[in-house]
Length: 227
Image (tube, rainbow, N blue to C red):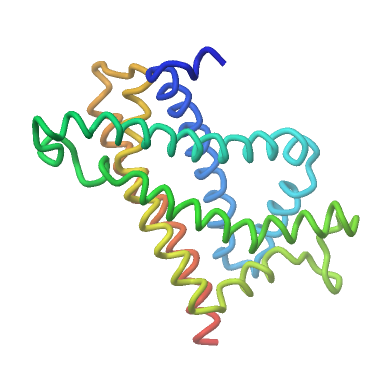
């Protein structure tokens, strides 16, 4: 692909995949936050069942999402390797830490932590769904006569270790987004009178969305512990 042959093209493609994943993250949060509604999981079950059985979601959006995740992380590691090679020369002339933030210099580490979380999340939720629907052929979403999604979510957050792992992962996600959001806009040339507003929105997004996921995990864990 010609777009990926140049450094600017790779950064542009990386930015587009970042925007897609940030939109998915927001949509994912909008569904998950309903799990704390005082309706015993009814809204969460309905939304989860719709997303899990809708043909457009399952056969179009889901493959695109998986490709987007893989592409973003692979491209991120490629760009980091190329940047590290370039820094060997520039660092001999100046102090790289003085010209960049800690977050920008350590995106590779926060990205690796998030990748580990994505793998855990796939093991917890996505792989069992694939097994149930595509291998066992059960698309009902039911277990013992009720939708299983809310019960499965609650069960996952009974574990102290898993809950802590999720919290740590979302802290890394916040750090990653703190730099990545603005970097993505810069890569697509968004440098105009709205730049300040975009930076403010980016900071709010980077803090509030991960914090919301942390709240959901801790909420269900404490609900189990205190029950």
